[in-house]
Length: 312
Image 1: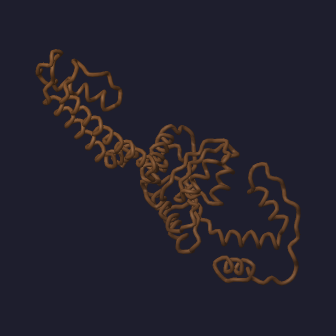
Image 2 (image 1 turned 30 degrees about the vertical axis):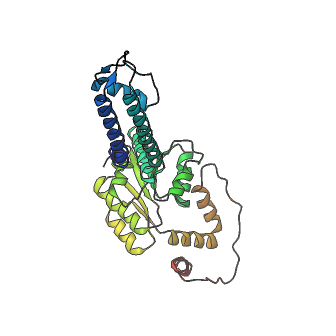
Image 3 (image 1 turned 45 degrees about the horizontal axis):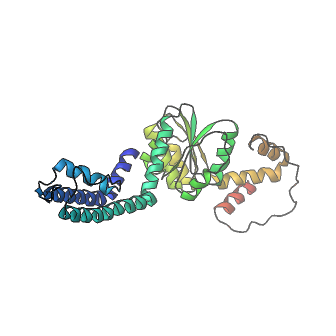
């Protein structure tokens, strides 16, 4: 469902009862006023108001405008009915206003508004951009790196707190941000995966299944798109490669490679660190690693990767 249609659906669903109550109140007030007989200036019985005049009077009375008794002065019966109409309309409008305030605070409605605003931003994108899917520490580092070289990014993240924090980031280029699950193809399509301006997708979430879903969806929706994905498991990396991911990065293996390089070739590591750092970074001072035997505490994924690299 398109964002604008979802907003309309939410509004009509949440405001259905208040609108029905207000319509019923207006209908009863207009019909009653058109049936209650009036009096003329001499106090003699006079015909009741027509439906048009009754609707006109109820319209400006219920909204507290109050132009007076028109087209002629009312009788006591009409004034009594108008009094009932005033209290009924106050109840109806109060119910409507409270429902509107509750709708404005509803999380589903706010997410739909954010998605609609994001969709509008993406329709007006007319320059190349990269999709950053998952904006944790790695995603933010990539975002700031691309921003410093004036490359536009579009961000999708499932964490609402991170999405809100991104609005406070000091960026040179505008980075549209969407709160959504990258495992859902519709989310990726909304984020511009199929756009002719999309130059690549970076799957950087901490969930291998989500990154694999990105690789598979990109293969189906945009086969020529370059995909760089993060994978912690060897099996996931193999699946990503079968879906045509241009580069699959294992953070544990990569860190272990850097650690081995820093221990065995410190100057090469300094050069690599400088070349891959943020634009404008300076070359770090030379630091010789401690000599002697090293003890690896823990034998999880990280410990296993370091053991393999250091023993190679």
